[in-house]
Image (cartoon, rainbow, N blue to C red; front, top):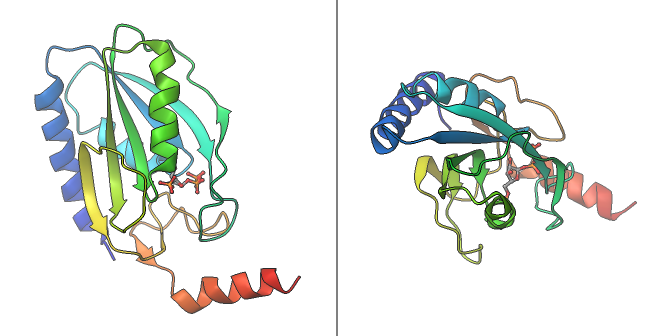
Length: 179
Ligand code: PRP
């Protein structure tokens, strides 16, 4: 779906844009584990600013291709984001449920502002209304893996982003239902 070269170029452009937007401001990038770990690593090296880095770990999906709708914070912020602008770094915004939950959660820290940067954004009907400020690539409804994104915990180490054929995860679901 997206080649290594396309990712590299887009991440560099996002980094430049973020650096221009936040110049002279205190900035904390909050990476959402696990999916965003590669994107976060590449993105921060393209932002020529002094910044802080923190991580949260959130899961929603379980192991399959569709959101369970249940959100769990496995690891919270280590540093307090009070007095800093927060930019959430996410690999993919799908239904938007995770981002709505996290933005609300981070407000407890009273940051100066909260914005969202996602590598991938799924565009489909019926999702949560969430404002995403920086988007790498838009997708329709493909289930994708690679560059940090997984299927059943695997394929995060692919250098590019690939679609999982529908029959693969649909077969898995049928298998689950029959057990
Ligand atoms: C994925 C992804 C986002 C979330 C997006 O996380 O990394 O955090 O789902 O879905 P939503 O917009 O429908 O809420 P996942 O739970 O798969 O965890 P992971 O990042 O550890 O793979």
